[in-house]
Structure formats: structure tokens, C-alpha cells
Length: 224
View 1 (spheres, helix red, strand yellow):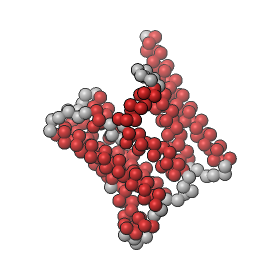
View 2 (tube, helix red, strand yellow; view 1 turned 180 degrees about the vertical axis):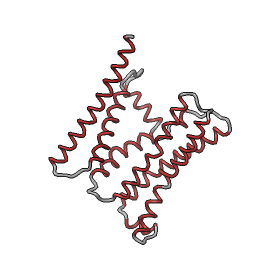
View 3 (cartoon, helix red, strand yellow; view 1 turned 135 degrees about the horizontal axis):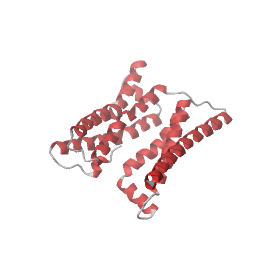
View 4 (cartoon, helix red, strand yellow; view 1 turned 90 degrees about the vertical axis):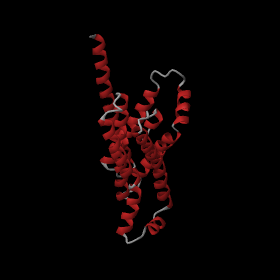
């Protein structure tokens, strides 16, 4: 009974702590931008708050029950998941600041990039189903199909869709759009697109293995 009460207390305390951190971050950001006489939408403030909580939570989880030194674990993980780490570093330190400090320019492209996360529930559910030993279930297969389709549409086809739609609006072909858009925007889209193609390839290979009755390795599942 005491053990159950302790665990419940930890859960409730953690929930209140993370919610408080989220609220305090929002208050700080509002005061910061107000002091510097900059306007920022509530939507962007909440995005930054969410990212801040996630960053702190991940680091605290990494420090919990680590059998080796923290530096050794980090080095090992980076070596095994270099592309995944680089992907999130780019998002955190390049794409997020661009979304906040863009002075209201490029709403269409920002909206499109938010659609990237529509595939997230399916990629995460794949891991959950695997951990519960449901790889042979119809739920795993159905989720896998939805994951591949949503990933292809939201993370691969999204990029050419943005260029084509932008060109259609201003009566330009794709080549003219590439020339008109700033170089750093084109490079940013390319940096986002290339890892997605790699991960979609892994998903398809995993689906082929599953259809052939082969087991899916842990490396096949680590996709984001």
C-alpha cells in the first residue's frame, strides 16, 4: 500500500512539476518579448514551452539509472544514432528560431512544416505495439501501413507540394521558384528532406521483412 501511495505521489508531483515548468516558461517568454518590444503569437510561445519541457525531461531521464558514465552513454548513443541526433539538433537550433524570428513572413511554408508531425503518432505507436509484443497483430500491420503512407505524404511529398503550390500562386515553374526563394530556404528544405527519404526507405525495408516473416531489428524501429 505504501509503495502504491509513493508511486502515485511521484506521478502527481511530476505532472504538477512539468505543468509548472511549462507555465513559467510561457510567462518568461511573454515578458522577454514584451521587454524587447517584439510581437510573438501565443501559438509560438506554446511551441517553445513544449520544446523546453521536452529538452529538460530528456536530459533528466538520461541521468536516471545509467549503468555507465553519462558521457560514455551519450557518446555511444550519438555514434549509433548520428543522423537522428543531427536531425533534432537542426530542428532545435535552426528551424525553431526561424519559426519564431521570421517577422510574420512565410506563413504558408511554416504551416506546411507543422504538417510534418502528422506522421508522429503512427511512428511512435509502432514502438509501443512492438514493446507489447504485438508485432504479429493486425494492429501492428494497420499502423505500419498508416505510418508509411502518412510519412510519405507529410514528410516527403510535402516539400515538392510547397514548391509547386508557391509556383502556381505566382505563375512560376519549379525551377523559377528555386531561383526566387533564398538559398538558405532551399538548403533548409533539402536538409529536412534527405533524412526523411532515408527513414522512409527503412520503413519500407521493415515492411518487406515483416511480409517475408523475418523479425524486425531494433535499428529498424528507431525512426523519427
